[in-house]
Image (cartoon, rainbow, N blue to C red; front, side):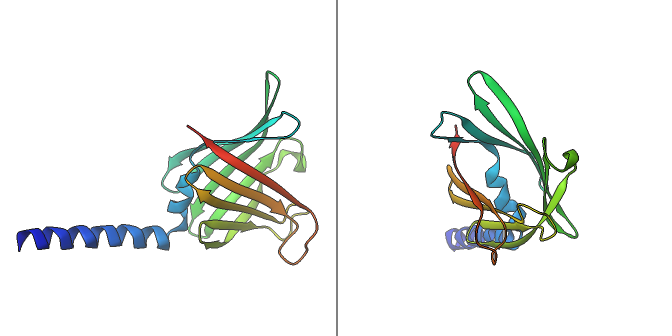
Length: 158
C-alpha cells in the first residue's frame, strides 16, 4: 500500500508539472536558454545567445561572426507580463534603435508566433523548437501576405 501511495503521489506531481508547462507557454520558452549557431554558405556564423533572467524574463543578443569579428545585431527582451508575452527587439541599424514589441499570439506544438501587424517588416517572428538542440526561426510579412520570408536554422552549442 505504501508503494502504491508513493507512486500515486509521484504521478500527481508529474501531471501537475506537465499541466503547468502546458498552461504557461513562457516555461516552454525557457528551452531557448543557451547559445544557438547557424553557419551560412558564405562562411558567416549567425547566432543568438539567450539568458534566463528569471521565470518570466529572458534576454537575447543576436550576432554574426565574420572572420575574427563578432558584431551584435540585435537585442531581445522576452518577457511575460499581465498583458501577455512580448518579444521586444532592438535592432542596431533599424528603427532608430527603438525597441519594437511583438506579442505572442500562438503557442502550439513548440511553435511560438509573435506578431506586430503595425510594423513594416517583419510582422511576425516565429520560433519552432524542433528538438532540444535544433531550432527553426523565421520572420515574415504575415500569415496572409506570403512573399518575403527569412529562415534561420540554428543548432544549440554545448
